[in-house]
Image 1 (cartoon, rainbow, N blue to C red):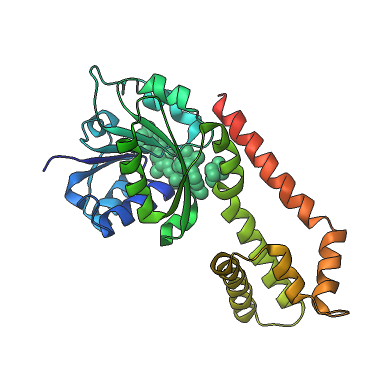
Image 2: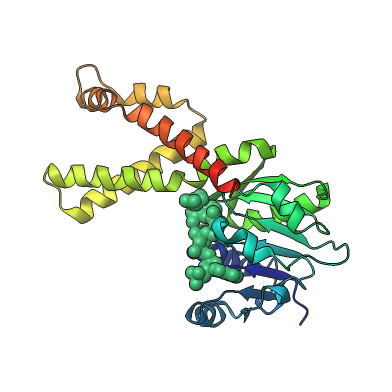
Length: 268
Ligand SMILES: NC(=O)C1=CN([C@@H]2O[C@H](COP(=O)(O)OP(=O)(O)OC[C@H]3O[C@@H](n4cnc5c(N)ncnc54)[C@H](OP(=O)(O)O)[C@@H]3O)[C@@H](O)[C@H]2O)C=CC1
Ligand SMILES: O=C(O)[C@@H]1CCC=N1
C-alpha cells in the first residue's frame, strides 16, 4: 500500500500521535511508515499498531500526505541533512521539536509546506493541547490537515510562531509541573496520615475536577479559590503557606525559564 503518513522518531510523542491517528482512522496502519534507530522500538511499534517500520528516514520522505518529525531537537541538523526533496511536494512536514524555528525547518524542507507544532503528553489519552504555526508554503488547506491530525490527540489552537516557545514553556512542559504538584499533594496526604493509594487518588481527582470545573464553567480561578476559602478555615491557612513559600512566583518563573530554554534549543 502507498505510504500516506510518515513518522521520523517513534518515541513517546510520536507513539502518542500514531496510536490515535490509527484509532481514529485518519490513516490506516498499513499506510504509515515509522523510522526509528532502535530495533526493539521498531518491533514494538509494528507489533502493537501494525505500522511499517524502517531505519531509513529517506524512505519516510516518500509519504504522500504528511510527515511528523518527532526526534529530539539536539539531533535536528544531522537527522534532516539529506532529507531535502529535489522537487516541490504537497506532503506536509509537521515538526514537534521544542525550540526549532520555522526558519530552520523551512531551510531543511524547502520544497514542502511546514507546520511547527507544540503538543503535550496528555496527547497519550486524547486530552492533549497542541498549538500550531504554519510556514510560508502552508496554505489554509495544509493547516486544516495538520489540525485534523492533531485533533486526534486533543485540542488545537493556531498561534503566531513568535508564541510557540512560550507555548512550550506553558502547555508543552506543563504536564511536568502538574505531575510534580500531584505528587507533592499526595506526599502531603501521606504526611498527614493517609495511605499512599488513597492520597494519590485524592490528589489526581482534585486536579482533574478543578480543571474540569474551570473549563466547563469558564469561572475565573480567583473566583473558584474564593469559593473554597471559608473565613478562618482550612483552605486559607493552606493558601497563606503557599503564598509565603512563593508557589505562585515559582510557577511563573518555571514557565519563563522553560520558555527561555526552548529559545536556547532553537539556537543550536
Ligand atoms: N515529551 C514531551 O512531553 C514532548 C516532547 N516534544 C518534542 O517531541 C520530540 C520527541 O520527544 P519525545 O517523544 O519525548 O522523545 P523520545 O526520545 O521518546 O523520542 C525520540 C525518538 O526518536 C528516535 N531517534 C533518534 N535518532 C533518530 C534518527 N536519526 N532517526 C529517527 N529517529 C530517531 C529515538 O530513538 P532512540 O531513543 O533510540 O535514540 C526515539 O525513539 C522532541 O523534539 C521534543 O521536544 C514536544 C512536546 C512534548
Ligand atoms: O522537555 C522538553 O524539552 C519537551 C518539550 C516540551 C515537553 N517536553
